[in-house]
Length: 391
Image (tube, rainbow, N blue to C red; front, side, top):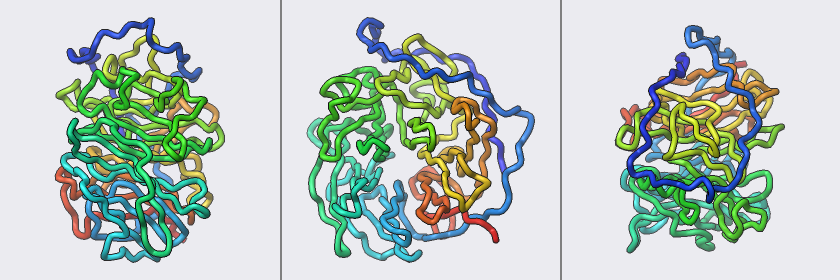
């Protein structure tokens, strides 16, 4: 087991492409009143709880991006090439349940996030985010589909013209406790767009299930919920506090010193600083991360564990690490979400990990991403795996 060591680094220069931003035009959003993170001693490795093992659920997938459970025995999986696959009773169907036409899966783009409508049991709505190439370049669309009677059909495109690119394409979808649909978007390789409130790039968006803008969004008439993001790819709400957490990829060298991956607590209207600051830099009017990772881990998802099946992980935050290759567990102080008590890579021998979700059975499911051109393919890849208790 590997402990992730968090190290301070030299403050990076602000990327030259970043525009001068007037502090007068930025909304007055107060950062959350949280204490400074309390990090584990880098010289010590806290023991990983025993009593669990990694089990294989399905094999032979192609770059799975998102996992959703429609029932206790049924998982829908998005493959970046454009197909939605179905796993029923542990068996992967050989044919796609649905395949999007015209998906642009170059680089990091393609079919990405999936999520279920809160009223799925009645309306059978599934939402998906995918990239297409248009006249103005690559863009993401959010589609609503109907999953009924063993087939899936397109119902509507509820949001489109989200800037996308071969890298920094986003695009995680999740419904919040408020019944609104949250959409993460990358800066689409245009760093300055993350600070532009008239752009959907480099943002976390909040919309109604039909694509309209909620009246209580922080910017009147805009789907923008938070901004100043480079490439957020994980969102989940902490049980109890209801706080929205997000994981975000930091610079990769061409747009700033490597590392600086983040876990953030998202506040409505909050500015998270990209590209004006990264790593350990701070700037008045922007919100600093709860924790940043250097060297890079490339956090591609986030999920809080809240079931009783694996009590050793109760309340813990998990994310899949792409560059860091593994499943990472973060222990937060239950009384202070900004206090990090331990950070451990609890699975480190399966390669690149993308999504992680808690299943209806209380087990923790995650997927590999070793066939994406950046990983080392292992026998059976790509896979859906899970953490299960040892009885």
